[in-house]
Each structure stands twice: as structure tokens, then as C-alpha cells.
Length: 239
Image 1: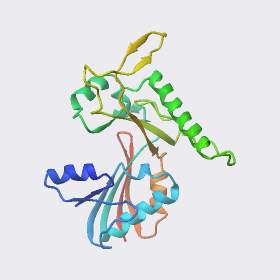
Image 2 (image 1 turned 180 degrees about the vertical axis):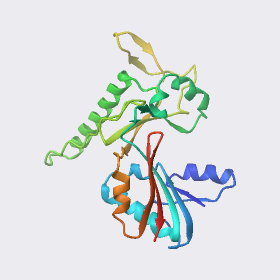
Image 3 (image 1 turned 45 degrees about the horizontal axis):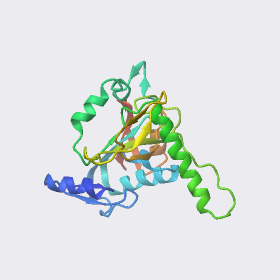
Image 4 (image 1 turned 135 degrees about the horizontal axis):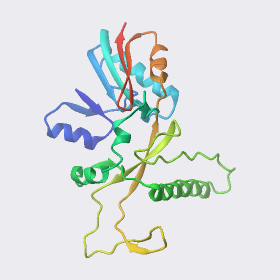
């Protein structure tokens, strides 16, 4: 049985005749000790505090029966490990064509062909959020600068806490409809169809970090810790 925060993704599972439901990884509505195995892939790195990341792993352990195992994958800070680039970095060239082939019209996808010019637009977007927040405070004390760096896709990470751009497809305009005018590098004006860009929070884990968090729990034992294509991975056993 699967679970996800996204109702749309759960609906896709239902269409494929899989059992899945919507829930929060911090509070899974399944009886304690009822699972032989649990898998958490690319979930925990979206929690924004160390306390929540620990609580998510504790919740995963709660579901396991004694002797049960869990597999955890999180995004690694080290996208180049032992002189080998991850698949994420290697796919920088040609990723644009692959995305066109994979586009299904309504699904979200990473903005993998993000370049320096888009990156500057994303930074401006982040700055605008900050300004809007200050404007809405109506004379309150100045807020702290909570801006996070916006990651340029298919590049190495320079911060553990960052925002990754996601491009929402399915919003392209018909040919007869008006399109937005944008100024491209070099000062030339061209017509370009714009799709919404969203920013998703990530905490990328450094070497040994995930294993250390897991070892802080006395209810599990780390069976194995390893690196796999830009991810840090741990296999746990419930004591």
C-alpha cells in the first residue's frame, strides 16, 4: 500500500489499480508494528527542519514490526562522488529534448534545462516574495531575510538548503491567444510563451548525515548505508 501528500499522484495510482491514499509522512494512519517493510524515496529531504526529518524517520520505524526493514533515499549534497558524476549532472546535455518526449501535458516536471538567465529570473521572483511579505506586514518590524538560494538544475549544489525550480506544463497558450513579451539577453524583444515556475524546498544531505540521524534512534539498527547515483541511502532494521 502506498501513500503520498499529493491527491493527484494518488489518483494516478488508483487508475493503475494500486492501493494508495493521501496522508502526511509525519503522521501515517497505519497501526504500529504492522508492516514487514517500508520504503521512503525522495521524501525526507523536503522537510525543512532537522526535527521534522528525524520525526519522519521515527514515524517510519513505528510502522515496522520487530525485525522489519526500511529503505530510505534522500538527495545527496555530493553529486560528484569518488570522481564519478551522478546521473543528475551527466544528463545536463540533451535534457531539454528528453523532457519534451516525457511531457504529458498536465504533470509537473523539474525545469532541467534551467540556464543562468532563468536563474536570474528565479532570484528576482524570490526577491519579489520577500518584498510582498514586507509590504503585507503593514508597519511591523522588519522581517528576517528568509530567502533561500535558487538552484540551477543539473549543476552541483552549493548549499544544503535551497529551492529547486519546477515548471508546470499544460498552461501553454493557443496560437491565436496573446502571449507575454519578455526581454531576452542582448536586449532583443521576442514573443515567448511562459509557463508557471514553482519553487520546491530541498535539504540535500551531506555524507554521513542521514546515517547519523538514523543512529540517533534507539528503536532501529542501521544495516547498510551507501551512495547511489546522487542519493544517500540507508537500510534500517526495527529492533
